[in-house]
Image (cartoon, rainbow over all chains, first blue to last red; front, top):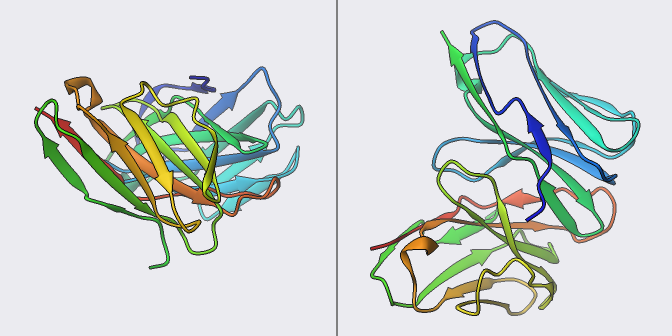
Length: 109
Length: 115
């Protein structure tokens, strides 16, 4: 099925470092969502973005809805060990959510 | 409960058996989705419900897969004559079902293992 291009695929970072990941698409979306999935659990919604250019924060997380409506990025500041997991972006067009391929984040203490 | 619930959390079955997976969406959510996630992979869309009808079944991999939703609430995903390649985590999600500002919330998933 259709998926968004999400990068990087995986990353190892040191605790305390900032992290940045992004999603791009050839199509526009009405809404962008960012999720985190821990092993053995379902994805948990982190941030939802509704307007082109919108910048939204949730604690150490900041996400932006690209001006072109075709991309979004997620930043995590001052990473901690519990940030480890898989981060997925999702774009919504009418009723359908298209998911990114995921970014696997590993934080080294 | 306040969130999406799924049962069972784990299911081990023998090849050729039928299985039923259940999803209880968040109360008031009219849209319900089923996804499949193979080990280490992304989310594969299976089917979308709006109320009790399924306007998009395009992701169901074969006619062995079917789903229904009753009362605009609980949904059941049925896999007949299971095969080993059906082994995966099956995730259910729900949302309010409008066109704007629509956040989708996931259940914990059912891990299916076909021996």
